[in-house]
Image: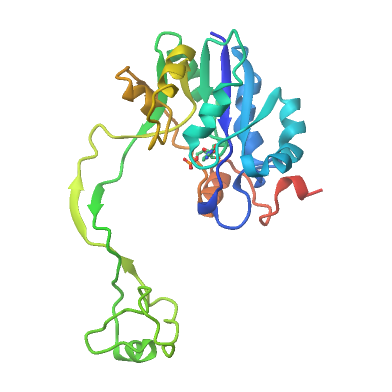
Length: 282
Ligand code: C5P
């Protein structure tokens, strides 16, 4: 098995808020490099292709080109909007001779060797392998409408300028009459109506790395409609081909929000850095 690793790292990270999540310090190195490192010491890996943001590729190269080169990685241009566009572009850079492609999110810095072992071992006999963990929480389907559910008292109503039936237009982003003040902290609870409980039986949260025989992955990405794919296995499923799930790792979380970064640092026993990107710390 000769593996090319693709690391999508072209996302805008808008759900992260201020700052660049991939550049955030993760124990002395940026999140992105931590996500790449587990692959650098594996014999099966021939190439590591990191796909950066097309609108900011020069600064991405300035920031990561040298350390990634040191780890044996190369930078290519990713896609502007969707993750699948990024993978589609990166596939063109897979060198000849590779039999498999592993795809791992650039925002998963807590990948451990045992998980890579499991995925790669299964990949010797299965054409598409993904890691996943069972859902443990109870699942509810909720209505799309958001409403205010905080208990109100007359004083708060007066401060908020609400009428007798407690019309909560201001709190919920309704029209501003220009007079009411912002609600005091602690008096807003955005809520939704529960519609039904969804069975969690047989449901898994899926992670990366996902490993594919290269011909199967190329076929999956050659389909005319790639819209809506949030992971790579989904496109293999659209072909009607089987996908095998192996045990994932609860710690292997994807950093999407600031809170995810805090949780990941805690899981990794890593202290925060006050939000300063690691490439600017010296
Ligand atoms: O958007 P999501 O959280 O699913 O992104 C997962 C990974 O895909 C991240 O590492 C992100 O940088 C990457 N991505 C990408 N190109 C995009 C969108 C997301 O490489 N256009």
